[in-house]
Length: 454
Ligand code: F0G
Image (cartoon, rainbow, N blue to C red; front, side, top):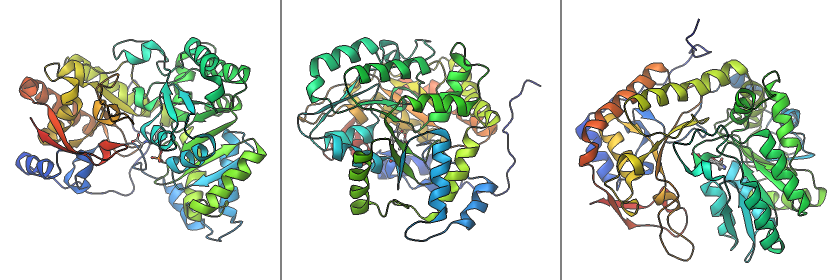
């Protein structure tokens, strides 16, 4: 059989509240045209994020009941730690309530005025946590990674020559090297095992610790297995272990590739660094055997980690993206290709080329998609990355709209509905107008800024 089916059946459902187009036009206007301000029960298909929005399995819910809520030394922590170490062999595993808490701890140690931290592309919270310490965050992804139409199989790769030159030039002010797998802000594109190894080697040669932001490690491993020469006959856990064996530590949002609704961790090899991190953790998150989590959360994550590396799941997961991308491509909608791991990225700058980047074509598309179809997506472009710490504003490298798929949550008819919505959008796209930001905070403005339609 050729059809790749959802490799699960549904035991428990959540109803979707239907809305009309008129209702949605009013709701998004009242939300200041910011999709983050919508109430989620006013959304039909919520593709705002794949973070914490997935469906837990029956086995995870069963594990929840086993959660031990002891303040210190809970067996749930040790099951969680063992599940992490089975895939990522780091000496210290420090739970946090989500990924950005792990980042805050790491950059509290490594950040500070005058420092600079390179990555392929920092995610917005990573950048925010670095910049809030006064340090700079630099993106050194390969040139192909900035070209939405380029079919390079590993568009998340670090530009190795640039990294080497960067460390040669700025070495003294660089406390560590980061790498995000998959490269979320760059289109959910994977990083090859070869590139992970080469990045680690360059960091080592310059005497810098190397950290992986591993949020979507299983999706990245699936791409390595399917696209990287010599990896086809290997198991996903083996590939995952090889990726992390190269690193000195990792940050993780367990709301992605651990099937959690909440959770994260910081993992490290260095004893002194781990001690400093745990002291910070006790001050901000909780005792080191629970971080900011309940014992039941730790159990759900331990079970989730054993499910996320399942090849039937990963095949279906990536196929969902490919399916929508093929159909959007046929409609003439410019999408980031090849398909990434967790999301479909539409090139709004190319599709709505009549809207200049500083009038936010991605925002215009995200708002129109909500009005027409009740689908919530998110702009990943100039709204998210255009404002700089010195107050200046420039267009981001790309203006994308991300349709991120919650794990195991929607079905193929939802996918077909999304494609139909783009068909309708194609009819009206030339009449869409840009936006102006009328209120914004200093950092990470996209979450809370308010817009006016031009
Ligand atoms: N790193 C990456 C690559 C991420 O995608 C995210 C979150 C984080 C770190 C932070 O993790 O949310 O648990 O604090 N990304 C979500 C998204 C929010 O929608 O892409 P967190």
